[in-house]
Length: 186
Image (cartoon, rainbow, N blue to C red; front, side):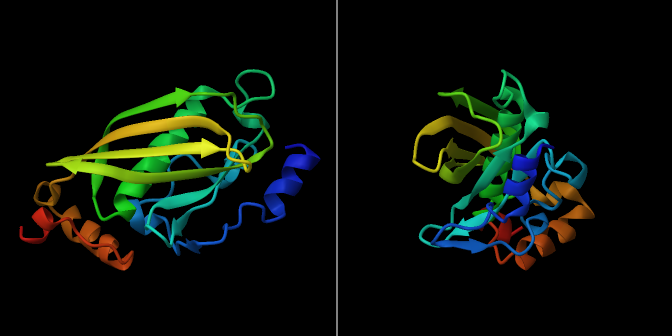
């Protein structure tokens, strides 16, 4: 990682914006640690996770480092798509819907520069039976949209999880989330 990138990540620039509240442990939202991030990949990607106070949506900051390069000096589309899978999935869990991804699509509007801190937002757009539709975007600090995502997620039937059911329910409760109505009565 170059000096500028290291300074950005270590300077706490992934801190919340006004109106965002910290999420104590993202692991309790989806039952595990963020899939696309790990300490050994800090030169690739950094994400912060917060809940918007106004509507409960997921929001945060994302930084793509030199290890995420696709086109020269810009983030690779594959890692951007991975971020959308992560943030839209987490947004659905945060809204109280235990899900699995069925489809994630991304519209790339502008290349995302490496080494720049950007803002993302993700939320549940609507629910139709077991289908949970989520949306999100990644934008620059000045509001310019780099990419938009749409996701179709399917509610997990907790009864089918066997022994894991109680673990998932406990994780949902620890996160302060509510089970969807159809799950509460089973």
